[in-house]
Image (cartoon, rainbow, N blue to C red; front, side, top):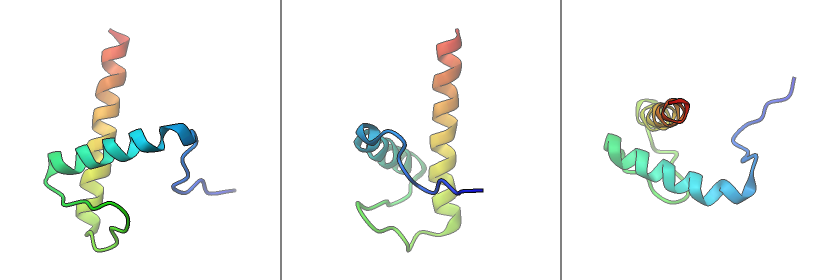
Length: 65
């Protein structure tokens, strides 16, 4: 079994994903920097990722209506 890791499947979407990540981090109050963010706690990183997933699910549900 192969791990996908953090590879962007559509390279043209990388810039948009980065903007989306920064926007989500601001919304949950996490100070995310460009580049290395290894000093984030697991809780902070999880809140950013969780907020991103929440927003993607909301957008998908809106598309179904």
